[in-house]
Structure formats: C-alpha cells, structure tokens
Image (cartoon, rainbow, N blue to C red; front, side, top):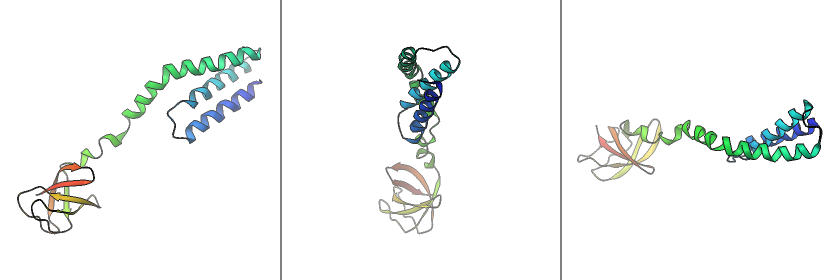
Length: 144
C-alpha cells in the first residue's frame, strides 16, 4: 500500500475515534497507520507484507502501553466527580414553607431542587437554608 493510503487510513481512524464515545481503542490503530505511512514515506518499509505486519504490532503495543495511562489521566481531569459534593454547606432559599421533616422545594444556584427539612424548626418561604447533605436529587436542608 502506498504511504498516502496509510496516512489517509490513520487520519480516518483517528477522526472516527474522536467522533464516537469509545474507550480509546481505534485511535491506536489510527496512530499505527500514521506511523506505517510515515515509515513508508521515508523509504524504510518498501515491502507491503512488512507494512501489514508492522501495522497491528504497533497498534497493539501502543494500546497496551498507553491506553490505561490515558484513561487515568482523562478521569483525573473529570470535575464531575466532586461537583455534587461541592453544594454541601452552601446556602439555598426555600420556595415554600416546610415544617420539620417535610418535603418541599428550594432554590440553589438559580435552580429549583426537591428539598427536605431535616432541622428541628420550620422553614418559612423565602428563608435562607444551609444544605446539609444530598440524597440523589434531594437536598437535605436546615434553617440558617
């Protein structure tokens, strides 16, 4: 196969990986195709059988060496893991009056949430409350 076909295959596989919500598998085959294409362009792989042998070997070695660190790095930069916990301790405003133990609604950061009064005193409509915990999509609040 000529060098430009390997480059086109590599770019196509890489674009396919970026367009799909995959787990970083296809991109390593795209990178391998780019490597084989560049080596063929440099004249280091004149035989087609050597190109077809090197392509899966480079892809599988790169997959084995770089996939796990890449996934760990992507997870480390994920801010979504701690976003929900960051609202604990913030102030919400009760939309309706809630006696102790009652369910109602509270506004937190401009968004209405289902809320439960876990305090010992009633909460008036419009009163500021402290978020104590989150249980699924339910805020546990206490009067401030």
